[in-house]
Image (tube, rainbow, N blue to C red; front, side, top):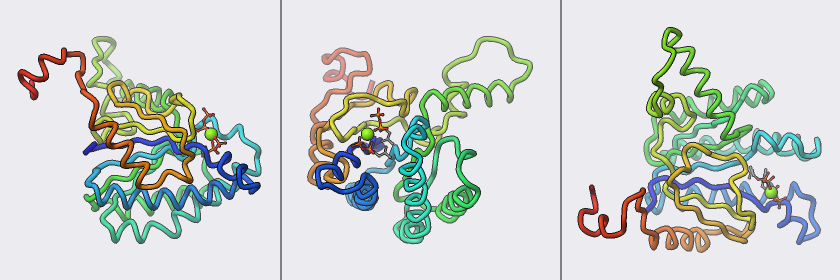
Length: 237
Ligand code: IPE
Ligand code: IPE
Ligand code: MG
């Protein structure tokens, strides 16, 4: 089983369009699938689930769609945190939260606080998140923490400041909706992640589809730069 699954939930708009519905109907349906995905991870023992909900580039969408997405985010936090908590899920939101309205920021803070003691599943929602933003904010905080140091920085120096420092790197990345790109999601953390792309639109990505992605992951050989023979001889080296 992958320990950490990261997902770009794409295709809500096209799902709605196919049904002659407004795009936002696709986002509403998409929230339902998030619930199903959380349940599936709890059942399968996936320990970290990281979902891309809103990219730093998504502000470029029509203002009406952006504001409906924000409303949905607020509603989801108001309605779901209690249930997440009961199921042992720890919620975190990563991204530049400063651009959200104060009420939303407050809901995020409360949701994180309420679920902070839970250990069954770490659910992370990336909102106003960008992989480049993450690396830059980490670098700025790292440099501020060591004002007298000028050189010799290592990868391990930066890692504690990245948004996902609490989690192992994703084992499996899934992008629904047919596009085969990263769209500025977790750039640093995906360096050795197994990538899975599917044409299935997010509102149709049910547990059967999820199991297909897991099965594909389980067939892969993760070599991390080594040869296949090395892995057979000493799998843990
Ligand atoms: C993903 O679905 C959800 C968000 C980016 C918020 P889209 O809204 O991108 O759906 P498509 O790609 O237009 O079908
Ligand atoms: C990526 O989807 C971000 C989210 C799913 C939140 P987009 O639909 O915005 O990505 P692009 O613009 O097609 O790359
Ligand atoms: Mg899209």
